[in-house]
Image (cartoon, rainbow, N blue to C red; front, side, top):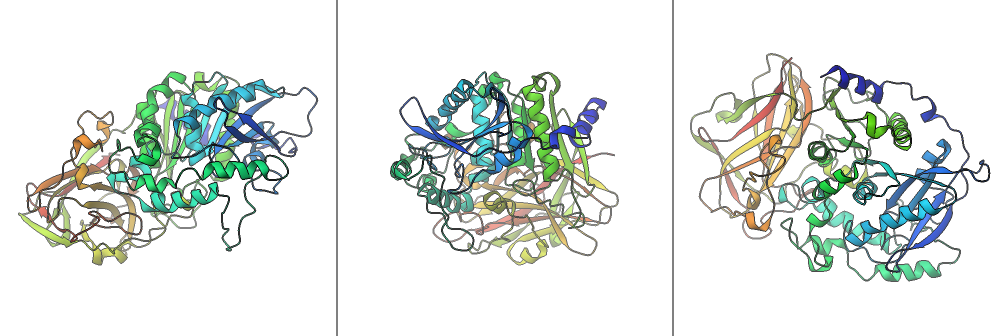
Length: 589
């Protein structure tokens, strides 16, 4: 770690936030308006400013574009206004087209018509008498993704973005990781947001929500907007037709997931040069993988921050430390640093001062570190699957272990995938509870502390009775008392096993294109190699701990079964040379 990086780390997490956390202004009532787009579609926007201002006072603006309703009927504010207006900012929150009280249709995530709207919304802000003409895009989850697409528009008013827990590539990081359909997000989430678009959301107690805030008293415009929304089915109908990144479901109007991937828009984001502060988590779907790829792929000035949290960053999870231990930065401190970053953007200092820095938390050690390059300098240590279900530093004699896939077997409910849907806690518990359904390989106790930082790589030499299948690999740490702690995982659908040698992310490990042209089914009864990277992690294991690798062929709590019909596969995992192994990126101390 360079001195410059250490100084940057301290400025992010250790300095006195001062005015960034001071409340100075009272919140005015919400002003709701319709703004007409180029094609006549009207978007619903809420504006909130401070009420204790002089006539002619101008404000920098925080812009949030959401598909989860910009406000609830009968409420006097929204969460973004409550956070940022007291700091002196104007806050504009809009329903993206086809959602909430906005007109139009929402056929799928970030359709081109939706992202083009962001230019016109920023034009509208700049034209207002209360506006300084400066905007920062902000958001969490879906609204983080819209903040990214604001930068794609390269609007002169946009001075920075803060995407918190964004999906850099929705196919790989969330909806089809490893090419395996994530049913929690593809089906459960999709049908839930369709209820939002019908204004028919049920609350936790079973009561119906009051619904989205209308723009004007009376619901005539809202009723008309809701009729627009009914013109397209749930996005789940399209997901059921997606196997490859370049599949184009009929209900998506000819678009593929490539068309709304932030990763695919990286060149346009670079052209904008927009300063970015991106938050992610080791335990939130693939947001950490996306954050690392953003850091590698883009040249924008940026802070990338990867911590041990749930989706949203308000519930920490470090399975190698005490469960009640506070992990800094807590939510108020994160918000304070976002406000500090906004100030730098509005003053024009962020682009000059930031550069590119990735800050990351090391599990077990409980320490934050910084780097200007990724992956960190590490030595690859190889651990082979051995007879007697051991992990060995050298290949074992030839042999194999069999696994009959049971499509009914799943995992705990509080996983990295579930939190991306409900922002709930992550808790994998003791992984031994799943041993009966998986093949599990454990090392001897570590003789010294071991830091794993980067992307583990799994090499599976397998034979299957089917032409396709889902392969899951989990890396765990076993405490001296026997409890096994989840660290990270990776998965791959066999159909996508061809390695993409020209990937811009090959430095992270073997990559896959997930394109139709590269499909490579298995031949039943013939041995084949599947090699893939696990999600990145940073963890320091004390001496006396053991490493554990767990392999599975199903995880139906979250994922679709592959293949979807016929006899479940019987899998053989081969030992010896060639055989199955995992390469771990080890940091020397």
